Length: 78
Image (cartoon, rainbow, N blue to C red; front, top):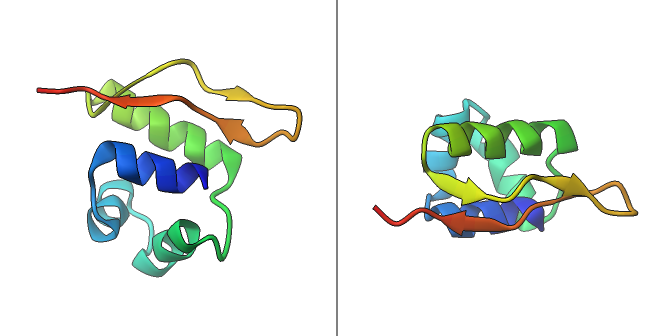
């Protein structure tokens, strides 16, 4: 679910996300479909990379009581 939000907010396609992060397309596809979940540590790195490169403007990521990464994401309008 969280990866899907990242995809929607970034405006990137699955292919673009796969290439951008260097992750196999099938893995990204499984995350987006909810077949598997993107590990929390990777989600943090993805958000950090996109923030540093100016693709996303976000609040600091935090963990909820279920220890799942929760992030509020806003796209920077250029």
